[in-house]
Image (cartoon, rainbow, N blue to C red):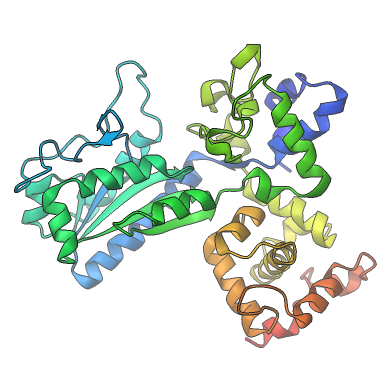
Length: 407
């Protein structure tokens, strides 16, 4: 498996720890969701394509904007288009990407802006990249879509929605239901999603997979060990689990968010982080990112399947494994689609599919807890002495529950 702790980069970092802490440190980095550039770009592009297809079908032109820091007067957000807080908004808008001269750091914004530009060039009649007020009005845009890599705390995205709402013309269009807002993101935390959804503009949010956090990914003694480790390194860290104490466990090829534990990215008090200044370039994530590794490890742990990697390549067996992992997470108290995706690192669309199948099979209650039938099925499938010949057929496929086959 492509575990970070098995790479030279990971091993060098683990040398920071004595034998007492090394096991927990290995566990922490091996449970990071690693997202390579090609995976990130393809998934974000797929999300944009879905929105664009809908725009074509309903003849509702759409405008795409890369998420960015917005201008403020102190803590007060300014209108997204300058000087448009009142009256009729006009002008060409603002650049898709701005760079702070003190930081000289573009990050994911450049990648996202490029992806948006390519999509809009292929659909010039109904998709528009970062249009200003004049273009929005001329093309009769009916949907504004903000595109980002990750919704952590959700504060920056919330501010950007505020900035659009400060534009008097857009606020008027919203009140007359002439325009709506959506967000496309690769991943998000449950708290970030909740915060952004609470915005008065009520954006519809599309994400590929939920971000695992320390509290969602670990349990029991493992959770305790990880928390102690994050509190121990670096010394005297004010927020040992990252900004807003989120504890996010995701790393992109273009960087790691600030709400990840400081043990991974902070240089405070002489600490040597895994990702210096939140840069992941030296880790070469594009080469080691392997989503199947997490599912393989969980399959081995939860249902004792030895050849999970091969089975995950078969559609029917993959669905079976996903179903058991999601049921196991439900049995441990997780209820929402977002938290189930975060725990299992299974994409949201598959989580929704499994919940539908399990509900029809009478394994779940309306409140997404296991029924007596669901508990019996899960217990049967997880029995440690379950005969391997029943789990795997001659064709090397997993036994598939009758209740799901019938659907």
